[in-house]
Length: 141
Image 1 (spheres, one colour):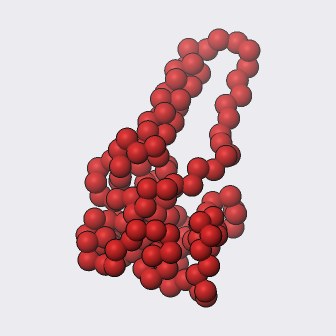
Image 2 (cartoon, rainbow, N blue to C red):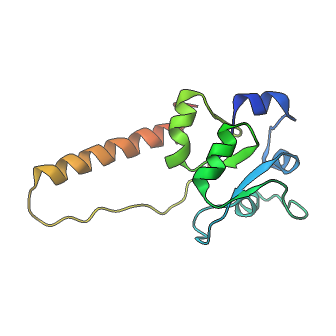
């Protein structure tokens, strides 16, 4: 979902729908893996045609881009794993309330033997995933 600092949002043009973001400083992260959305894919998902190259700096990786967002330099596409704590703490704000939920996921495969350490890990990771889902669904936004 698009995220930015509350300061950035207060000092720039109002954002009420996806097309409004075309006029903002968009922070880009390089990714060869097309399963991670970039701004072009994000706009396409919402039926927006930017009409040319999107402005804004490009970073070598997602974490550098998120650091730029935390510095108030523009709007980043926050992945739930890197944006959730910042959203919870109020360092970043969801610019729009329509996250894209990908239908891919992570899976745990374990042997058919009981191991308390594995059970503890699976319980922990499941609770973490549930907390992230609450953020996406708006409980912390």
